[in-house]
Length: 105
Figure 1 (spheres, rainbow, N blue to C red):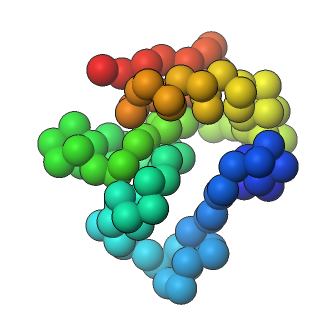
Figure 2: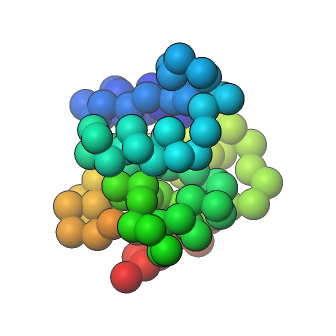
């Protein structure tokens, strides 16, 4: 999925690209987003709590699709990437699900 963002001309990294890979702590990931101005894409509700209480990570895209195949998830992002990029110009917390996009304020 990350390559879809790269193909669209956006910087994108996966936790596997980080020195500690998938063992990278949530705090370290949030710190990275703040330093680099990155949008965090996650299914992890812990980041939602951190965002609401501590305004971190920098920006948040919550994926709330439930169980979904990688192909379907990839298609979901491919069909919405332009809209998501545009929405993040003015919003900090967005949720994507099978039905559409939800903007949280």
